Structure formats: structure tokens, C-alpha cells
Length: 233
Image (spheres, rainbow, N blue to C red):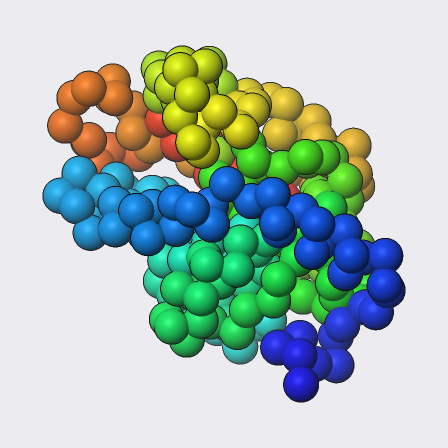
């Protein structure tokens, strides 16, 4: 039985596309190393700061939420999100071990029926997508009326975004596959696909080489290392 039993949209083309893109996932080879970063001193600090920035926008309770790009399940576990989609089977194995009901798929072809979820979370996922606009459109399709989409990104024009872009140019196994966007671009993508932008918050307001600061700021700050934005269907 599928983890999205009762909500799955069946299509051979969708599953073939998801399988093909999963085979190309750069996260398979880096899954354990990526997940262990959250246990490092610096990784734990950054994770806690980003969680605090996101949590004001996520009210799971009895609502049905999905994380797109669930990875190893760190954020989903924190916010009580029961289900996740990701193209990396090794990442999904780690998420499954954390109690997440996982499904192999890609954001551009979400394997769920229309009007299924109350909320969808995407954290540092958009930069790795082949087609972010299509993915946001798929989220819109999959959400119930008035459903929420919460997106967390590293803004492209921030010192953090520039650092990761430079690492990508140098051949980093993950960042070389990433394309970073500004907050304004994400808001425009959301509005273009039918969402209403509601509010945003930002954190990691210091330089990447400095000790991470816990301060948060209201609004989408293009200079921040992390920005969280909430949209309504």
C-alpha cells in the first residue's frame, strides 16, 4: 500500500519521469554526509535558527501536510509532517528511519491527487529543481482551497547565496547542481501559479564566515542567509 494511499494520482509517465530523475539525484552519493552535517556544532546552530524562522508559518496539528524535497526528514520530523517526497532513495531511507512515510518522486510531477493537502513545505529544495515554476504549480494543484505553501530558500544575492554559487562553480557535488533565486523571484513564481503571498521572515543575517546569529527579521531580506515565505492557495 502506498504511503499516499487514497491520494495517489496514477500515471505511468509520472512514475517513469520520477524514476529517471531519481537516478540522476546528486544526493544519493552524499546522503550520509549531508545528514551528518546537522549533527555538527555549526550545523546544529544553523538548523535551529532556520527551524525558528519557519515554525511561525507551519501549523500542522490535525492538518495533512507534505514535504516536497523531504531529504533525510530533519525538518519534517521537527514540524510533525508525516509524509515526504524526494527523488533520492538514500535520503528517503534516512527519512523513513525517522518515521516519515516516504514516496519517491519529483516536485515537477507530484504523485498525489488534486486538493489533497492542507499544507506543503519546501526547504532549500527550489534551488535543486529542474523546473521550479512547474513544481510550485504542482503544489497549488495538490493543496486544498486556502491551503498553505511554505518555502525556505537561500537568497541568491545574499553572501550565503554567493558563497554556495561559488562552491558550485568550483565543482561542489551538490551546489554545482543548484541555481539560487532571489526572494522576489520566488514570490513572482508563486503569484504566477495562482498563490497569494502572505508573509515572510528572514534569518542568518550575519556573514557565512561568522558564528551564526539567532536574530530574525520580518519580511523577505535578500541579504539574509535564509528566508521563509508563506503563500495561500
